[in-house]
Length: 453
Ligand SMILES: [Ca+2]
Ligand SMILES: [Ca+2]
Ligand SMILES: [Ca+2]
Image 1: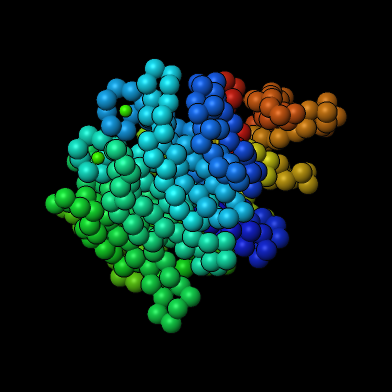
Image 2: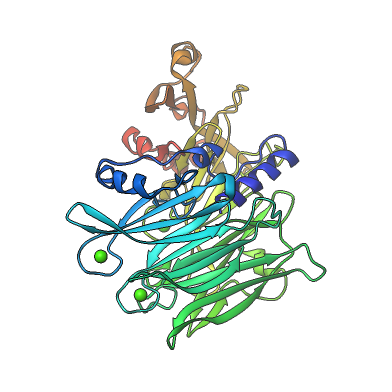
């Protein structure tokens, strides 16, 4: 997932030397972080060192976030943790996991999962079978020379010996409780583009009648560039969903939302032909995520600012964040401006949902300007400038400000400065009242100006 996201970002960068960014994409640095050991992981270190073969090093699975090289989890529910320790041997393309059982600070090796591959692309511990014990799901890329980037997934039971319960290939995968029955299921996506008859399918894999089975399958559009982000999580208060963000054009993107109803996978924005994309298409990639922290995942789209005259790449886009309406539509829940390069995010308060747009400050700095929109007159009026300024340049820059200002955030050598330019605007009396509604008190303004990373 991360690799595809990165790949997509690179494609973007190659195709559009400026302005193209994947909102939410992780920086290459994330991939290079070496696993660090927390204090409670040190006690097992000696036991691991004893088992590691020459060439084997500890290794953190790429997905999901939160996995470590060493993971403590009570797989069999007996009240004491097991340790699942990932390793790889880069030179011989081997990887896998050591599984230890713990007993009061003593550890004993139970088994070793071994496979060939380059990266562990996904791993986790879930009860798929419904017996109360967690199984180990582990996925890896097959081979360094495999340009198709085929990946394989296996599910292992924990016990006297590790048993492989399921094995399959996939392009992207997520785990979740898609049935809502408290057991976990797997959703596998397989995208096969470079063949005479391209195909894209989603398959729901669940444990049923004593074995893992493909419960349902759905055909998706194979004529896309690729998936840059696939996540599962709450699509509404009571429904898990699978959010599939994909690149569909030179830089444009769209999102599918899949849910499971009565054992069937449903593409909720289904319709005829291109209308699959009509609700979620966007000028650039944006990752589906819980942007407002309410536990439900939002889908982002781009809104062109009112009166915009800039090129696609230079446009200060507004991101509209939507939640699934439970049927086949979307509800707008939040708007934000995100500039990954400046590490700036501004979440629009409710008062800005209508009648507010963004632009640049107009002094050549390309700093953000919040503007009131007077649609009747076809005009906009500046309210705030929000500037990210290096600390050492701050005193020099503020001398040129015409209005009062305050610093909303000071972080990593940068001051996030809000200029209250509404204090110095000539506003026609007919719109003064509406304009004034867009002015926040300073404390409220400080809450909506954020860093992005
Ligand atoms: Ca246990
Ligand atoms: Ca189980
Ligand atoms: Ca949310």
